[in-house]
Image (cartoon, rainbow, N blue to C red; front, side, top):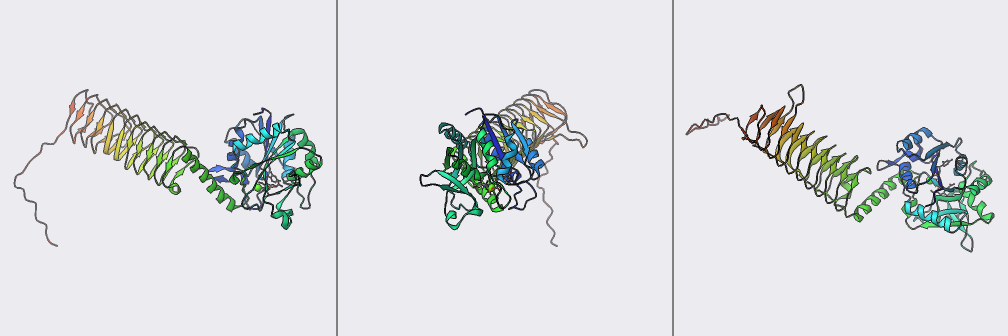
Length: 461
Ligand code: UD1
Ligand code: CA
């Protein structure tokens, strides 16, 4: 890629067709703004700078873009919103000398890096003066129509509003992505005349370049969705569908099997490895990472968490702000609360809640337990119904459990407490003091057996 790419993105418009009180480019598709979608792809070109032309409610656009922390972004204001031809003008003074200038409408969020790269290559290799992109959408209405002469050269763009009935039949349209040499853009933009509506159309440049015998070239995209631009609420709804389709197509390419896409919600910030299986009603949000070969059976909520390779997450599992190792099994019905770190080969079973705890390799908490503020070694087995009693009504206290400890069912571990490695507790034990390595801790109420005991008969009401 050449290293002198400067990009102008037009974001000043008032979106009057939508009657919005916010700039159109701040609208979101599946949680990501139009402008973020656009800038993400433009950044892949490694441009020298990206100049955003802002106008209507400009601070909202600036705020949205600053959140992204890109270093090569500059803003310039279009004072009066007099059309796309006028919007380019204030940006020209910010362009570097001898730059290749890409101009892009800010409401075209699906543009692909591949297309941008091909457009630049073609512009340079064919010594273009002006490159424009065209497409043939199923419904061309709303777009500027491409007019070619008998030799097939592009000579004009006619905007929808100015189209005759015949023009409207042309299905090749302007996609809103252009490349110029800086000097030519600078001199010819001045020649664009105000139309009767008091606007300057950037697209009038085509006729100007053509009349001056400049080399106009074009590329077209076979993927109509790529240049889909958002002018109405119906367009925004369609944009969500397109975005979902792109996501699910990518899943298929990475062998990520999603059995019921309509009930699955995976936010853009989530990283998914290959060969993952995801069942119905699964939400994965925030900065989560799901590693290779993970199997999530269904009805799970995972937020800001890492799930290691080959881990199986059974139904009805909630995982928040936690780290799960590889080859673990969790669920069904497990609640993994913030600051939990499960190492590898861990088994967490049904009705188990874990909070702010470290559980080291090969340990098991298979049924009905609460483990909080705990550091657990490896190879530990926690019997059913056992609980770390971490809260005395005032403060939280820690439980330390050494390697290879065996906690009998229904043990109450009253924190703060330390259970030495290899120690055992008997079922039903209430452990209130530390237990040494390899010792047995047992509390038992002596059992009393009364022979031939008869329950009182039920009284009839
Ligand atoms: C524009 C093209 C049309 C093309 C279509 C493709 C023109 C005159 N028409 O039409 O040929 O088929 O895009 O998507 O360019 N903007 C400003 N300042 C303004 C007006 C607009 O910055 O004064 C910005 C808008 O915020 C928007 C972009 O320019 O991001 C395009 O404007 P829009 O009104 O959506 O143009 P279209 O009618 O879609
Ligand atoms: Ca548009």
